[in-house]
Every structure is written in C-alpha cells, then in structure tokens.
Image (cartoon, rainbow over all chains, first blue to last red; front, side, top):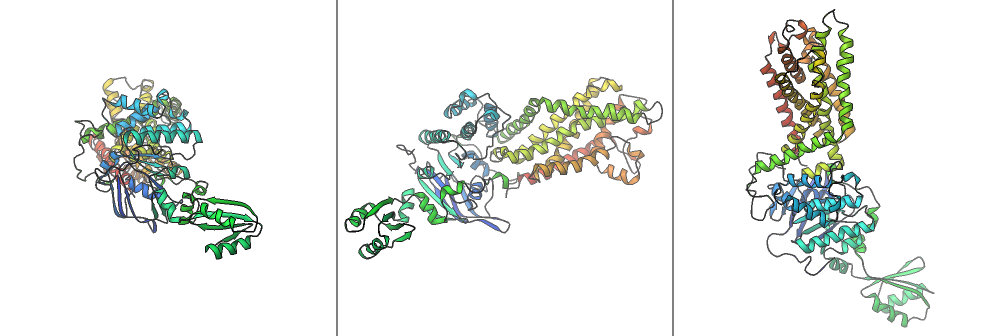
Amino acid sequence: MTGPGAGTPDAVGPPAIRAAGVHKSYGDVEAVRGIDLTVAQGETFGFLGPNGAGKTSTIAMLCTLARPTAGTIEIAGHDTRTDPDRVRREIGLIFQQTTLDPDLTAAENLRFHADLYALPRTTLRSRLDSVLDLVGLADRRDDFVRTFSGGMQRRLEIARGLMHRPRLLFLDEPTVGLDPHSRAQVWAHLAELRRREATTLFLTTHYLEEAEQCDRIAIIDAGRIVAQGTPEELKSVIGADHVELRTEDNAAVATVLREKFGLEPAADGDALRVRTKDGAKLVPVLCAGLDVPVYEVTVTRPSLDDVFLHHTGRGLDAEALGAGPVTVGARS
Amino acid sequence: MTTPTTVRPPEHDAGHPTGPGTGRLAAEWRAGRMVWRREMIHFFRDRTRVAVSLLQPLVFLYILGVGLSRLLAEGSSDDYLLFLFPGVLVMAAQAPAISVGASIVWDRQSGFLREMLVAPVRRSTLLIGKCVGGATVATCQGAVVLASAGLIGVPYRPDLFAALLAELLLAALAMTLMGAVVAVSIRRLQTFNTVLTVLITPMIFLSGLMFPVSSMPAWMAALTLLNPLTYAVDIMRRTVLAFQPGHSSQPLFDSVTWAGWDVPSLVAVIVVAAFCAVTLTVAVRRFSRTD
C-alpha cells in the first residue's frame, strides 16, 4: 500500500490532528486519561487498543461527537470545541456500523450527504459519479441500499465519506466483518485515495496486516497511550527475536545458552524459548558448538502482535473475537 | 456542539466545497429541506403503512362514531358525527406524527443519525426538518380522511378545506414535537413506544375529541384544559361549524371556556403554537447536548 510518495507528511499547514492532554470522563468512569497525539497531513495513522481502552471515546472526541472533559483537540488547526462545524467539513467518517439509509437508493444517500454539507449543486452530478466510480458502484447508483451486500455497503459508505473531499478520514474498523476479497477491495480504494488526494487516514483495526501498513501507530490501553511510533520503531523496542528450540536434551542446551551466550532461556513444554537481538546469527553458532541433537529451530522476528501483547497483555487479533463492537452513536 | 447562539467565524474560504453565495442560512435551509424530504420519501414508498393507518380513523368515524351517535337523543346523531369529525382528523394525523419520534430513535439505533450528527449543520435544523416532515406526512394522512367529509355532510369548499388542513398541520406539529421530546431523551425503541402509548391515550381521550368538555366532571375538564390537543380540536370544530350554520347553538358544540370565558380561536391557536415552541426548545436543547 505504501506507494511512492504516499504517506509523506505534508510539511505545509497545521497537522491533521493535534490533541493535547485530552481527558474524558463519563460520570465516575474515566475513559480517557490524558492523550497527546499529533498526526501529520497525509499520514496513515493506526490507533490500536483493546476493547474498552478508550479508543471509541477518543475517536468520538476527535470527530466532534463528544466533548473532551479536559484538554484541546485541533483538526487541521480548528478547535473541535469552538469551531465544530469547520472541523466537520474537514473530516469524513467510515464506521463499522453502517450509517446508510437502506430505504434510499445509493444516489439518494449520496445526495442527502451533499445537501447536509451544502456541496455546490453545479458539480454535484459529476462528483457523485466520480465517487461511485472510485468504489466500483456506478452501475448500482439507483438501487436501494438494502439490496447491497456488506462489502458493497462499506464501499458506498466510503464513497459517501469522500463526497465533500475531507482532508482527514476516520476509519473505525473499516473492514471488520468483510470477506477477504471485499477487504482487499476496500484497501485498494483507500490506497488509491492516498495516492490521488493525499488524504490523511486515521484508522482502528484488529487486523495485523492492516496495522503494519500504517505510517505510524499509537497503542492505547486503559485510557492512555502506551506506545507510539512507526511499526518498525515499536518492534525494535521489543528488541529481540524469538528463538524456539527442540532438542534431545533441553536442560544441557539451556546451560550452554546461559554460560556461553549469557542468555536467559525458558522451558516451555518440550521446547526451549530464548530471546536474543539477532536470532539468525545465534542459531548457526549455537548449533556448531552443541553435541546434543537438535530437532527443530524456529526464529521469529517481533511482530506488531508482540508489541501489542507487550503493552496491553493481550493479542491484537484475539480482540476481534471478543465482545461485540462498541459504537460511538450508542453513547452520544 | 455549541449552542446555536455562539458567534461563528466566517465559513468560506478559497478551495472550500461550499459554493460561492451559499450563506450559512441557505446551507441550513438546504439541509433541513433534505431531512424533510427524506421523511416524505419514506412515507410515499411505504404504501402498506399509508393504507393501513387510514383504516383506524375511518373505523373511529364510521363504526365508533355511528355506534355512539345512536345512544344520543333522536335527531342528534348526525350532529355527533359532525362533532366527532375534527377529532377523527386529529386521530388520523396522530399515528404518523408520533412515528417521527420512533424514527429518531430508530435512526439512532441503526446508525443513520450519526451521519446527520457529524454534518456541519445545527442540530436544531435537523430536528425541525424531521418534525416538519412528520407533520407534513401526518397532514397528508388527515387530508385523505378529510376527503370523506361529504359523507357526514361537511361541504366540499376549498376555503374550508384549506383552513382545516392548516389547522391540522399545527395540531400534527404539536404531536410530532411531543414525540420528538420523548425520542431525544430515550435510547431504546421499546421504551419510546411504551412511554408514548401511555402519554397519547389520555391525551386523545382528554381532548374533547369524543365528548364535549362541557359535559365532563370538573376534575376531567381541568385536565382537558391543560391538554394542547383540546385547543387544536376546538379550533377545527369551530372552523367546521362556521360552514354549518344552525348547529352552533347546541351544547355539544360549546367551545372551550376558561372560567366562563369563551376562548377565542386566535387564543387557542396561540396556545397550540406556544406548546410547539416550548417542546421544540426543550427537544433542541436535549438533542444538542454532546457528552
């Protein structure tokens, strides 16, 4: 997805998102406990966290659906509290829960959006055609949305979110519940969008490969950002490769690892696990010096899942199977 | 969301999607009209709902009405149907008016509401568009019942019909707004339906729609006078009577009085309009609250 030129932060103008010291409480419950975020224009930013970590509340505040209890949020330089209408013109939203009207046709849904955003009438028709074209729904423009599949609805939702040319697009689990083919299609459209219009994308996801494609990532847990950086940076914090060995005599190998290499191996069933800076280099040296038969060696580089696990104590993908989706609207 | 009184900086700068000359007000008007149109589209696409909801008022007029009128003294049965007619129009408008509230709750549940809430439009615009849409639909329903007026001796006169429809629109707006106030305070559709049923039934019975205020015991009459629908029905009844000279002398058609003072039509209109203004203010305030 990261094509040439894509994701290069635009140095001109204010950042797409600037949040400082943002808190949010619902009664006694502190959902967000001080978040600082800066997302550059044109960047694709992944916002990851377990359910209930404050993700939904944060997004609701960023897109003016909720007010921060404390702190400030600026979208493209406009304060969400004092100038929500200006902010709303800058942003587009694509959420996992559909916000289309199933009893209207695709074109009617888009026209409704155009009227809400007061888009110029003269170019409305061509704009409508071009967004429908982008998501491959041009031939379904006059069909009722209730006849659309889940993937088609999501694509229409993307088309609608783009009608008013937002410079910042919020995508909350944009591909959850879609089959692999539809997911690929959605991402192809988003990639096209980044390339053509340099739109900033702010997304949440439970899919590892989607998170890997982000320019930068923030991990939120218990209302705080616990890690932030490029996927590479975050992985390098974990630091080590993961080496797993199965040998004739694990205890003997453990001693060697401890004494000759100064590592801290741990037994795990019939396997021996050890973390080291460069697993690929360790394995040949280790095996050459052993007189114990080695059955199996696996070297795993740290993944974002490890990063997520490290910071939140839970796996990223495991979350997708957890409790049902929490939506912004249910709480507004 | 800021309150509607907040001063806003200029909206238009170069490269912005808003076209030149599209003022703030024009944009709000366009958004509100779209919300209104969506209600109309929904209504006219759902023919079954239209047909079925017409049955109830006709049942009231021609079954309950005819049945009850036979209990009355000889010769006054036609009078009773005439007396009941404005109320039946209100009843025809009631179901679609109330359903606007349900559709607000439904829009929230289904997610569509969020599409409107994140748009650069005031919440009051959205709510007014929705309510006027509902009241228009309700008036259309009433108009169909109105078409049967000849059967009970109401003359087909354009000025009478125009006046009745305008009054019906006001009554429908009052009911729509009442539903909207409940809707913006409630999250679940089941709760909404329960609350509204509990509210609307006494409002219908205590509106002088089926039996005149003059024949009610004092406590019931007092409650009836607190009901905005009483005044809406009263205005429409006077309008019907104005085209039916000879009936107005009967006690059945006595108009609403405040401590013996005949409440003039204009005052009755003001009462209903004031109710609309208050409920709209409350509904907008609740709807505009962002947590």
